[in-house]
Image (cartoon, rainbow, N blue to C red; front, side):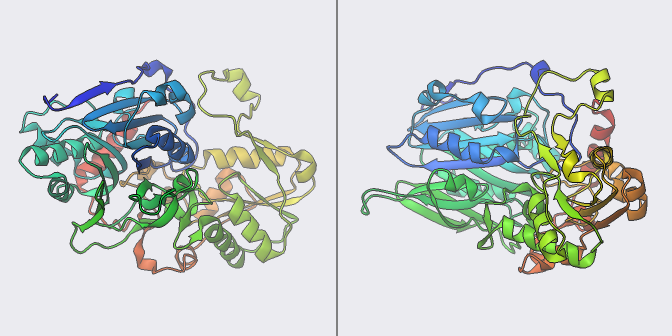
Length: 502
């Protein structure tokens, strides 16, 4: 630690054996959530807590907050949900004028407390605390560059690589903005970052803006007082603390927030927006706003489009809750088939350390979804979901519907078939484990046991955005990656998939 820097770590240490071992769901797993707040005189750690609470859907593995009080940075992070990691006593030990927070689902780096964020790195200007949503594709190159400068790596994450690169640029004599500009140009891949420093908050998105990041202002009592700012992965993170959405951080833009106000620097030349389309279909909360409307509205439209493309005679339309509900309602509105609740979700099933016995599994224990027999019995059912990755969960759901008395089960998916893995911050299987990469739609339908299966078209998905269709990344459906992915990264993903524990 440098002499002018003071650092206290309030984090608890959880053992790897305590990590939840529930089987992965048949979904692409969430990206991470990042949050930042600059509000001198306020309880910034508490504001960060609520911001992360609203972003909990983006990652349920670990959570952390770092708060800055001058050169003093206080950190608390641990494995678990936001509400499990923090309480009022802990938040009271995180004083300051600014704070950054993170809620994590791991993509690069294993599931251990040491890999929880924010990542702290000391520099000649004081410590920085970095929260990252995304995934780099040149981590190996960055690690090699940093190794040549005799860095000792604490974590196995690409996020630490970004933080160390930024620290190096600062230690080479640059100020925060100059250093950040240089460091970001060394990074390739997807990264939305919120970075706390003793002097202010840095925030940026990669040159393609693959992962989202929004800027807001907090209300103030005195109109003459300086503006107070918040940054979040989604607008729902602003809403919860009463902040007003101002705008998106743009692709390749650096935002610098200090006592002097907000400064914007465009560090990336030829920036071209390629927002992950799955943010709109599934990841982001339906009440979050993108393109001046809630994502609920977009999901209604893709449900309507799905009904136009794949109508079927049926008695009721149901959803796989919760993410399939808006599209199912849209399907119902367009088709004229009544919408009903056919599956009830247990929303209190989170991280659990108690595993069902094999006998319980064989008896059909249903921890998350339970069918309503009196709604389903004797009915021809359309069930709407947002995606199928492996098909395992879909098969179980279809069987549960039939066991509840459904006469016919027709599945409709409000996205195209997922045929390629993601390398930009979403945890998907390797291509050989993606059911749509190896089977036709008819073969998938037969495997999951439905009477019919149809997916939304790629064109319908993009047209429904009402935006420039070239401004989205849809590589998981097409294999057209906007950022080149090195072959060694593709091979590494395949190797990790083969050695990962069941």
